[in-house]
Image 1 (spheres, helix red, strand yellow):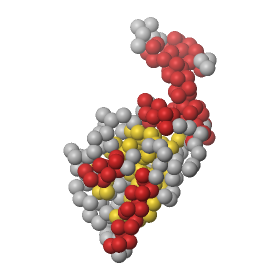
Image 2: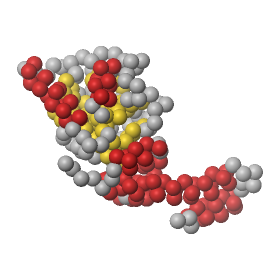
Image 3: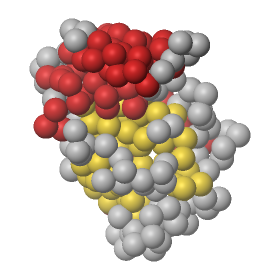
Image 4: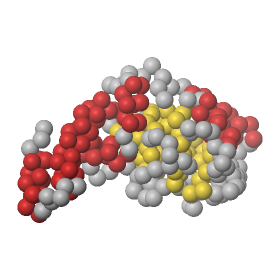
Length: 235
């Protein structure tokens, strides 16, 4: 069984903060990651009221614009193998599915049935450049951060799984830690997971000095300069 420098409780704790806050903290903890590792295009959240999701990536690829061209038995074997793969995890998972079609989202893999299935398999949700549907019938508390909403599943089929994928600029490998919400998604280096809460606390204390001044009737540019300096001196 894989060994991780964090626990399931560490992953759950990160769900208390939105994904932009996680990105801010990563700038402190792993500054070399500042310019990459996150989605860079607008995405659609199935339910903007759900809390963020954070778990180990279960990666896969799919297509929907045309039939797979494989025997039905092979399609079935890949689909059931995918289910076994998603279920084989000691911690909560997030499905990260790359749609390989020239126009991603032609057919929706995600809907009423697959959200129910994957929730039962232990996944908190999905990040995909592909599409989803059945907006009023998705499994409760299962979040989808997707590329587009589409009414049909067309010829959707799994291509492969447990390989490196890329979702709107975010490269992601099997077992990577992914955090996602309505803003998009980010991959968290494993060594950074347990360090993020302290970094978030530091950032909050630094920002409070500036935000408190902005809400004060005594605000001025001179005071803002003082607050910016004071903020830098907080450790």
